Length: 488
Image (tube, rainbow, N blue to C red; front, top):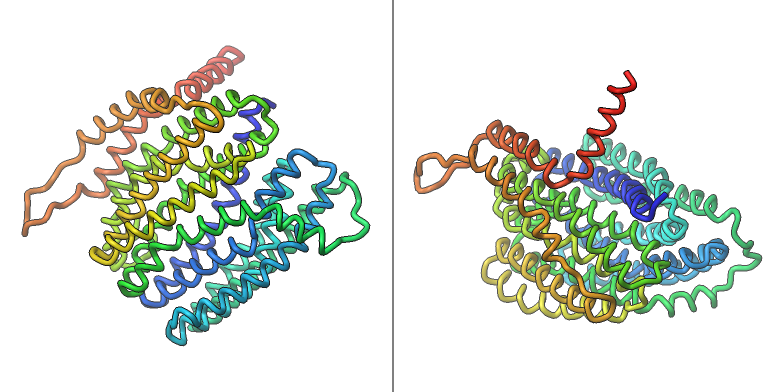
């Protein structure tokens, strides 16, 4: 199998696993929006956001370090797995304590504190799961991760439905999250052990070796930790300047964008092992540039569709008219769909070439810029300010990654990739524009086209867009059909 073919296969496997994870989380949010108030939705959504942040601290950068080492030294996979567990156990217990202290230091009300303290228990099994997944990724058997996540996600969705339909509180829902995380770890460990069956045996697990791995992962830990704080910063600041309602609206907007963002992450993660053992820096640049161009062509119809259908998607997804207010947030955030494909690939390439200190410098600057811009915009404009802050800092993040990639690895001709997709994009916009109509101004407000018109416009636009954006895919399909007709 070719290198790009292997990346595509692994990307599909990672995307499938992420899709199952996000779908189960989204299903919980959807049920919560139907069975409880918007305030309760915001409460759990914020609790899971804080949990995600401390999960990153619990992993302590070990997953990235382990994936790189396993990709280069496959015969030591079992050794890296078990000593990774030793390091992750220590760091996750500290992170659990940190999340509990955070709940009290921030002086949240009693209900918020209890939710945060309960969810902190899920940190330990999640950190151990990340270690097991890192070993599986290093062996490039990403499909096993998706299989290991299925039962735990089924337990999460089924347990959440039972708890909410019976009228239990959010505390019971937190207990379901803990149980699901534990089940996922047990299955992921079994899959990782299967991957390591032909590697060297481990006769003794040394805690000191685990601590040594933690020491080597400090740069990755700093990068992941700062990134997690940066990701959560807008919602944390919004929680101080606004209410749970605004937090819920911002969080619901982020959730709608997750499917396309999962594709970006899957491609970046699947390319990482290949980038680690690719010797030529020019080859790395060529691979990264091709993948970015592919992701840009995928993101264009998604961005146009979200812009047109934001209102209907929100109401359909959450089953609550209150969420329609988040449509304006989504229409601001869609600009990041053209920015986010760049940073995962450039960041993984910098990691693969042992430039993790450079990536840490980038995210530290991002964090400081986010604090300054966020304080100015969120304090003045609330929800809209948070959305604009997110887009602005993402653009700044892309500029930094591109500069350091050029300096440390090789130049990128991203303008050429953008021009390659421009004709298809213009044709798609032209077709959609033929159907987009503004109603007469009534009561000083504009009204969007109907749902049916938007779907027809997007369908016709895609018929024109796909052959122009993906000519190789279409020509391959034509050859297959022609060959079958000739055989017939």
